[in-house]
Image (cartoon, rainbow, N blue to C red):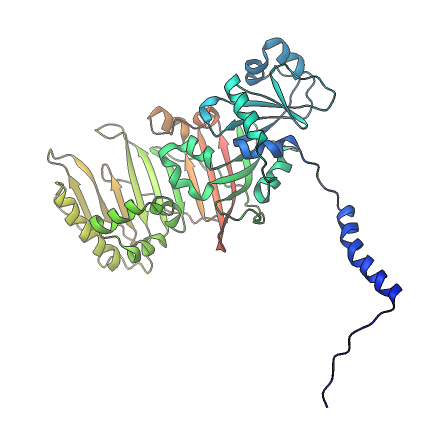
Length: 431
């Protein structure tokens, strides 16, 4: 016996009640959840390469940016009335200078040169930058979503910094491809004494609705020991290679000249690594560069990793074809020199099976590698010492350039469906 489906028939009053419930219930739910009012910052975010919020301290003198944009008298008068937050941002054209952003409730008169954007006033660095902002504000843009939306909330509540890919390019210049995983991000800032700390997130994915990652605890701030200037370590070399390898020309050169095809590159990307920069007291080099790799299943220097050793043999042929000479080899050590006898670099197998490649003199001391705790990578550098040696990108903010040490660490959450999001934390120490 087959069972026939019988349509459910409700009396007309019941049908009307069900229909009304299906229509009204979502509306009531939306009304019961308070919606954050749109702010002027939401409209500024799409035009900002870098946007930062600061706590107002009216007992202190007005900040230099206020005096530059408003003049000494108006700056001090308006500064005395600030009690919460103010902002500054840089547009995609970083050389235009910073925009000053102030709270601007309705009914409060604005400075003559200010542009009202909903509940904030924006004072541009010059008339051209002001006109550029007005043109950008005319464009209809989608409100901030995902990371940008979360950051907009934080920017209105506490000291926070938001950046975009344009800011990474302006700050790091030719080194920007190495920081591709930090293409856009948001950090919540806190300070104590001479230390500035932060926690937040970075997103290099095309998906705009990626959820926030779990927070990453602040790192230990043990200082680097001289002569080290920089120490970057991670559980996968892919962290450094992902951005540069997006260049088809570079992939072609690596394959044709250095024998690094797709399979070899995949093997390299999976290796744990340490990248170090150390100062040199004399000689033709300002610093020495070291890249330490940890092959899987290390067996010691007498039987090095076969795949890496095979590539080193190929590299030796390329270096000889380019005019470099192999100096007197030592067990586990290969060094190369120019025609004038100047040593330029080489590689060595360490006692525990690690491979150390270097540019400059042979490293005399290779530090031990303490394991990373909760992070997947960690960067430590001494910006002040690097700036004095001319080894720091010019675009970095003055506060970073003056720092004695900066620590930044990250924990990617894996790549799935185009999502590339990381939790970040770090600290900056002034001398």
